[in-house]
Length: 523
Image (cartoon, rainbow, N blue to C red):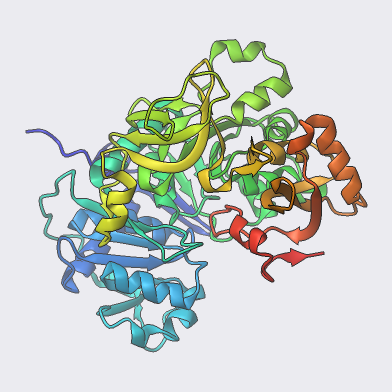
């Protein structure tokens, strides 16, 4: 009999081989794998008693806690579908996602109980409201339900093509879409991650990345597969991150580039001694090579850049190190590490194609769109056949990312297709310009957008967050860009802001910057 390709197989193996190894650290709580999976089984039993059956949806609104982690096992092993919701969204967003997904049970962290209470009468399909902690009137208590439940429940037969999760996209310019990830999708992404990013038995993984974000890039299951320890971090605070790295002897973490910038620029008096040897996986936007250099040279950490989307479970490429890279200078190695890289062994086939669908030459110059097909590509968008057809109607998922391919086969994203700036007929990559600005010693963060120009059609405009105490001027930033770029690529305007508008997963909302929205925090 063939085993179904599902991340639940990692749980079966871990509970058999590592019952007494530490599975979870969440503040003062420490759980072995035996204890952790006992809790998962009891929650599955409790959900089944509530009437949750195969195919039903169970939604969670919670930060990185042990209860959120338990959902990635307790819900799927019932054959039910997990809907991990971005807890930083508004109450209106909660209404849309919960209703659109058809969630039967809604589990909520104490921080979001008030927001859900304000709109729960608009969620008619939800039959049970469960407080993961801080239960109050009108809410069932998660811990009490687990304590009173039996660890025994009916195990349905699960197919690898069954839905595992529905993950909702950021929805920055339209209603969020529900990405349908199957058991096979998640299993293959986890296996590929373990092949290329080798978490070892007993190593500790720090949850700096939200678990709701593309299922925590499948590290919710990958760490378990390796017999590692999940160190939960409910609130992203740099001082706490460094403290946990020291006290828990953390070996791995994942972070968007904005978090890397935050960590790299944390004052020494706040961060304290920084242990070396930490492996960091970064994705979400192209990290600046200067940020990579600083973390590797000053902290002694190893940074690996990966690329993917929620729709691809999520990893498509990894910027894998090669022996010849060791001969490069620190600057050149940082530049290479900022590229998206090559296909993971398990992800499937990636092509960068032009407008006619033909693969672009590997010359590092010709820009095309990243397309992918294979093991990690989603089943489709939930209840949205039109969007599914548009994104992957011919079997190739279109990423919307503009990229070149270098002669060594490494892809490098130039921009989102919609964000490429065309000035006087020349294409300008905002990613390239941002990378140059981030090399300025006084620039903490930078974003480039195209604005209309009477002569050139479009011209680059920079939004810059300066290092604390900096007095750098607009003229100095523009001059620095012109010294390091072709002049037509340099920004003609610079606006200094206190912070850049971002999604909950750290992506800069360039549409807000283009529109001149009041949401931009100006200096």
